[in-house]
Length: 74
Image (cartoon, rainbow, N blue to C red):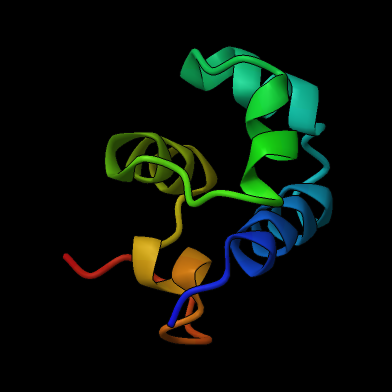
């Protein structure tokens, strides 16, 4: 089972490692700043998760914790 707070932590960690602020990430993908706070209690919509993964150039599976490989399958 996927934990929304784990997804939020992976997003934060990956963004930080790429020197991208959460505020900038959310602005660039067109999401509100409360999106990250909401992830602590509820899973993000699939399309929002896909936009974040595309922006961070990682797979949705990585954000969900299904794999530790960040690479996007092509």
